[in-house]
Length: 537
Image: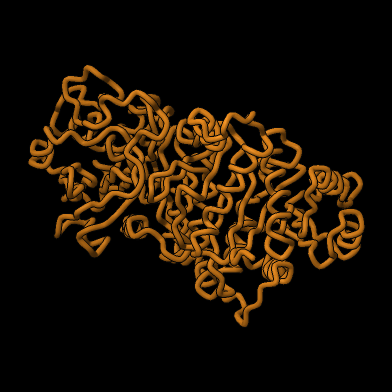
């Protein structure tokens, strides 16, 4: 019998019900009960990864230490569990088919006809079990993207059916998240959508072991009995998931409902430990009971979609709670910023983040915003493209290098202060070819960065093709823009600071990817604290 237990989380009726948050909350409770847990996401789209997807399509692209461009749900997993994910934690249909087709081309199938069953489903099952076979985890939770009934999800549901049979009932269970809508006209909750969702799942040969019901109102014992009767699920395994004030409340709500207890019972897991969420609840208390507020601007070009900057928003909230501050975030569209309205748009802010991105749309607005906070002495954090905009702004307005730019935006610029990385010049394919994953950075002693991190060598995650052009390093440093972080092997500039500014830091990497509920990122902590001091002054 396998040592690792598997939990599959499926969804029905509607998308965006919060499968990722439910999976992460369940994992948190099981982890707090003494089990080693990881979560993976199966995405039904045919893209190999979300790296080439526009943020408007799929939200932000999350990057792991080992350089995987993944679904943003992996960010939730890391923030809740406080452990890193990897390439193995995100599987897409594109990657599955690519692997199977490559095997077919090599002749691995010995002339057989390659089919969905067994070849695609076997590859899905292999991917699901990779993490379990490492021996590092007692429990692997697998979230299946989309909703039951989607044509794209059918091979995944079939793979779950086979795995439940292969592994046995005590080693694999299905948690089905569904919606109980409230009809205001009738003033009642309706179970029919959930019944149909479960029926759809059962028609694929999979019976849910646990139902988690998303609802705006308490569902009560009568509805639980009705669902148990019609859906072939134990009444104790009908879990209410009522709308929460914040996603950080969900682990406590699930613990109150006993989700982890039902899961352990069905998987035959025994432990003397009860979930202890002391540190989590300390964070939650600080989050809900701030002593002060700070106003932070977030300048980007995808601000219409909150998920486009999910990790940055979460990192700011983590840092705020640990500083006992409420961070009010003001999204500012960079395309709407110009010299005439910048004072009005940025008025009243105590700090400004200029967000990552690609392409030339909205670039001039970002540069105008950087100049404003540099000249006004407002705390500034530039991330990836935001750092590059700070370099361009300084070159233009302090060094007077007319039309200084990045070769990403202007190939023929006279002053390419940002240029394509040397090893990217011959790259033609877009997917998975950037500088990705964790890279070391050596900090200059005496710098703000060194004081913030408290160590000389750090490791941060990257996602970019363009870099600070070292041909302009001395010129910029002599003018006051100091490079204070370098990659020790390549000499690439990772961090820039302005010495005579209260708090001005630009970083080429993405610190937001490493911020978690229990370990807020030190850079965001320092930035939010600086914003609070600016407010006082």
